Image (cartoon, rainbow, N blue to C red; front, top):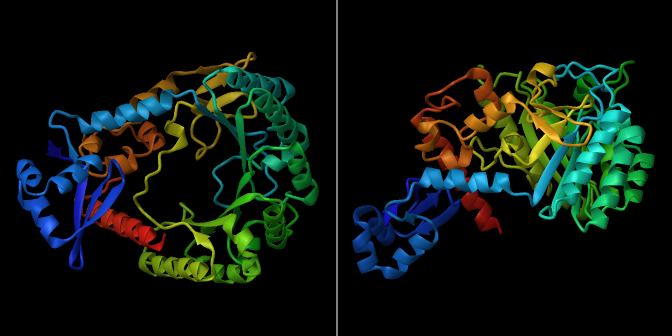
Length: 436
């Protein structure tokens, strides 16, 4: 046996934290066990403390001598990718939008709406997947553009048909939306209820500050502010049982205004608060490396603390996260309004970025760009030797496609950065464990 290459040992007061990035296992060691782990070879650990040795083996801190850990980890990801038990379809019913946010990367087009022939092909895709005996769960996510602009002619009939097909075949159906919620009216919510899904609908909805600040960013074509409508629609969605991920898009100028958000939602019942998670994100065009970086991060931490003090569920800010992008999964696909297929939703849906085409019979015809993503998605040799590889998975495949980088860290992290980010991740994990 040997110590895992993904082990990390940190000192925390008079105790030590032993963490394994591959298994995500964290344990606390007293000084005697830390000395035994750090200063003795594997054989002596077994001889002197067999129970401790057995625990280290069970939790993945010790592995077989001949094992290729990065290879084993990649094979586990490939196995998950090859699984036909789950499949996810992200659908862009339209690339048109009723808002014009300054940071949006998409070129909105009022004529970019899904036509009947593409709609029919999407239905055939759903039928094909539901017919696969191995499939257990189908996920459909509506993106765009603003998907609710196409609610009656695309979204609702597609949900109804998918729900009928899944129920007949005893398959799970999970539905989600990325929406600005301006059109999330009582009529829309009632129509969603009447579809009769077995699982709650999830929605990601964004606010850009308090009323004044948000309305400067998100307003309709005639200049009408959207804040009050969106807040009211969020509360009504919670009343209808929707799971809400409230995304706060912050900038250096807007971050201070978000403190007022508490006043708009503090009247929520505990039941509703449990169905809403708040996720704070800095708009990527608003540089996080300028002179205001430290002040911004302090304000962000204060906002996160304030929201938590009022009983809201707030996602932790971590620069390392055990998150694998949907774009790297073989059982996820994005279907654009025009039938082009994509993997990534964080870029404009132009034809040169398409990774395939949805055929009339509902089959996925992927191209060379999709094959290239598959070839590079597990990172390079530098990635695989890094202690945090099981946390970052070798970086964003979209960035790798665009930058053609073949060596070093795709994120540009130094060893000092990695040590700092690991410490942050481990201590957050410890605190989360203690709160449970």
